[in-house]
Length: 383
Ligand code: SF4
Ligand code: SF4
Image (cartoon, rainbow, N blue to C red):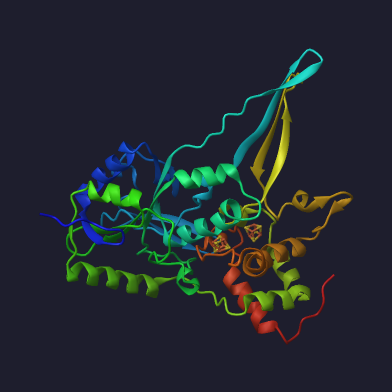
């Protein structure tokens, strides 16, 4: 007789049972999204079964570069993170706020059907789970709640996958957000073990996760399983591409507000906003109105925006962050300093996306260290 599983118990699921996990999740009415191969990258998309996963692929990443390569094994989670983050599912890039239609000389509002699918997020990395917790604070539990985010998040079933293949841009270990899951807010957490028999260590973090896990043909973990998982964790820690020292980052960046190094970064920065689009915690939005050419219909949409766009800081009379240095300074200072004042946490989880997907390879870890080395030294005031 098998024992009754409890939340937190770690058990083994053989690789060939992974299809059963998808079935069990889908049976509960979830639409599963996870990592897939598309256009030369590992992105997020709907998945039907384990066959849709990027099996046997790894990503090579560094500042401004990203390449996929074949692995020499059939690892399911043998990559770091791709350009997409889960915010595109919990906080979609575009959302309709209202629509109206002309009727003679008047307009009437059309109903908006709020799209809040029951999503299963499969293969969430620990750093990404930390980012979801950051967005929860801002969008679900903060002063100004986003009802659509809160509803999507409440319904979501989250499967975390510990990271054993960090990329060149990754620095989660130095921020305590990875490479293994240590926090809350997920339903199942998996550790893939490639050594010996291909298998996963799985544990439930919620009653929903426990129901799914109990329905699967799990077996008990052995000391060898736990040792193999720990060896992988140590290897991942050694292979972490970068590190960030968060110590005193807030005070440091506030002190550096007038440092002329902001101007040096701004000379390289293209103001493209890639870093903010790829970042799993950035949440800036704007609203746009669209009207049909014949003027019969109009719609107001909320769309992702970026603090790098000139229009984002436009108030009556002009933009308050007109210069590139002011926009980069705002982004980095918000991420690492003022976010702490607002939300009690940093806005960075160390996923490395802003470094990898920056076309000119600007590195937030390197820039922070540059400011650290300059504080107290030569800091000529800029405009
Ligand atoms: S600031 Fe960069 S490294 Fe930090 S969470 Fe955002 S994208 Fe990831
Ligand atoms: S830091 Fe890089 S990704 Fe971000 S706006 Fe500047 S050039 Fe674009």
